[in-house]
Length: 148
Image (cartoon, rainbow, N blue to C red; front, side):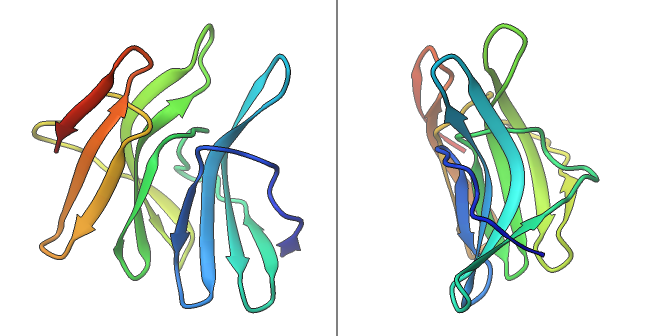
């Protein structure tokens, strides 16, 4: 269903999913005394200039901003980390999810080996030998210059 544009936000991810469509996930918006985190998925069609909101509940990641969404195949995006709401302060994450953009179904990814610490504001890039390089970010106390 076509919908209005998303609420204003920062720290969201924006990915190309076809020659004319872009996917927006998550982010946060701030008001005077509150911050709202999102885990919604919008697709923008640049041909029709219309937004579509997808309601994806099964296995969806928790609301967050400052994460990365990295395209790993023509119809798969890999989400890592970010920060989300907590009871007293924001909670940093190092979890991983896969979104199939053909079916709009999320799945949790089990990680093994040397797993990056929880963080937000990092970068992640896919390279053709089936690897993703993740660099930097922060944990709200310090910035990182580590590479995974």
